[in-house]
Amino acid sequence: MKILIKGGRVVDPVAETEKNLDVAIEDGIIVEFGNNLKEDSAEVIDAVGMLVAPGLIDMHVHLREPGYEAKETIETGLKAAVRGGFTGVACMPNTKPVADNQTVISYIIDRTSGLGLARVWPIGAITRGSKGEELAEMADLKKAGAVAFSDDGQPVTGAGIMRRAMQYARMVGLTIIAHCEEPALVAGGSMHEGFMSTRLGLKGIPGAAEEVMVARDIILSELTGCPLHIAHVSTAGSVRLVKEARARGLKVTAEATPHHFTLTDQAVEGYSTSTKVNPPLRGEEDVAAVRQGLADGTIDVIATDHAPHTPEEKEVEYDRAPFGMVGLETAVGLVWSELVESGILTPARAVAKMTINPARILGIEKGIIQPGAVADITVIDPAREEVVNPNEFASKGRNTPFAGRKIKGLPVLTMVGGKIVFSRL
Ligand code: DOR
Ligand code: ZN
Image 1: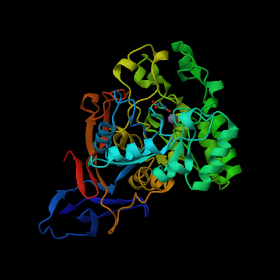
Image 2: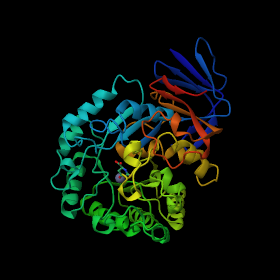
Image 3: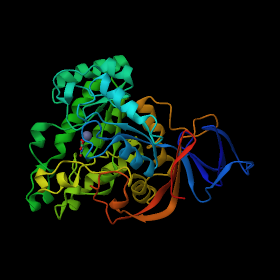
Image 4: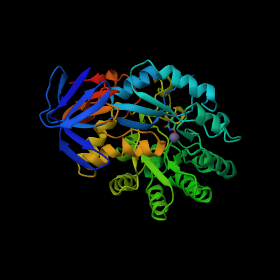
């Protein structure tokens, strides 16, 4: 089985280069880079005008299985992933049961293999049932294949238990991914606290609810020496805290979602529950700071926080709807339209935030494109435009605030282990 990706621009996020190169793939491995490589008997993919990148990785996805299969299954989630250009995803443990033990982690890994879609790296829970009371079986979780720990969806409210979790995580050599929110400050809010929340008559969640916990977790990371990754950074204050921590040499990394670098709380006008997400869409200065953090490298990763819900769950009053929006199938388009087209990120830097950077944080050998590497590859057409139509999603979730929005820069081919798992060429 030979495949030749011909005439594309290879984006190397490690060297931060773009080079016109043909890529030859044989038996699932990248065997050669070169110009005018011989076609022989290979299947040829015409990639003229396209970017050829290492397979994209989304390190923050809710696949919902086991337990919430009406929202998404591993299969539909992974179909959405490959359609969105992702060759691998890390999935959050807030399933039912919670992935706080080996059985659930093994179940997820078993369900994944044989589907022939994207790779999955499960994230184990920090605490049992993500209740924030007792530690999960962290060493066992790692043994079963967990690549990081998180109670995402819930904060770890107690500083004492977070400290112990970090001591353990450091011992087993995995990162803690922190969902930062102080419940006493969230206090039942459903959108960003500010002018808009007052106008719309909705209870607000102040930026401080996030920042208090970002600050706490940075301090605990320093105390314990545990690598800390801040999930879905949404405020200017959080960006500043991460930047300061990094300047002091702490092992702190951070991610931002496409919705947090694209939309402000203005989007909540009209009360569409597809705009309800946790952390909430913030103010203009926050969005500007997140973009700046992406540009200057403070924010290492772009991750979607893909969080599908059923229409029945979302079609209720704003304050009663669940938090979350789908993201896998709009991420690349938003990264390109919002960050690359505007010059905030070069293609290589944008790709780094969706390949090598998350791979390093999760400790997985991925995110590289070079001869000898396994052929996980994403081809992006930077000129291709699309109007977002949720009815075309492979995800069961249709809860996106981007329906009808024109995006430019689309994933057109997704290859996992040398197999084409999605193509719209
Ligand atoms: O909006 C969100 N939805 N934020 C989270 O942290 C959890 C997620 C979910 O699981 O629905
Ligand atoms: Zn979260």
